Amino acid sequence: MSDETSSTTFEAELEQLEDVVRRLEDGSVGLEEAVALFEKGQAHLAACRARLTAVQGRIDELTAADLPKPAEEGEQPF
Image 1 (cartoon, rainbow, N blue to C red):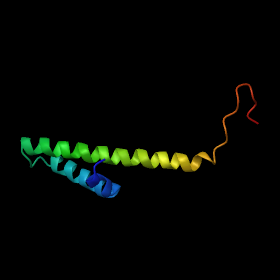
Image 2 (image 1 turned 180 degrees about the vertical axis):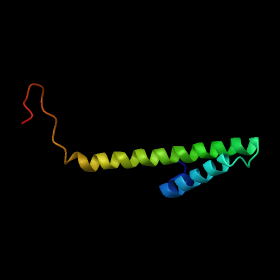
Image 3 (image 1 turned 120 degrees about the vertical axis):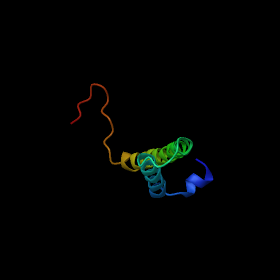
Image 4 (image 1 turned 90 degrees about the vertical axis):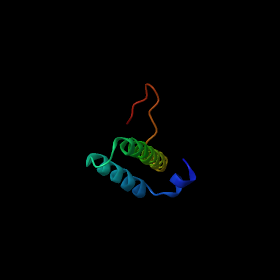
């Protein structure tokens, strides 16, 4: 992630993505601007996905200690 993206919150990225989608859906932009907006939207989407993946990883780390260890093959779970 770039420094600019890493300093932007998930909520801000999502809001910017929603703004791009609104502008594309209302049809008020020309072709060139629509392509530029689409690219911008793709960047916001990638940033949101990266943040969600990072958060999911952190949640997995935090909850891993709470999960029972997998049973050895042939071992009864109870």
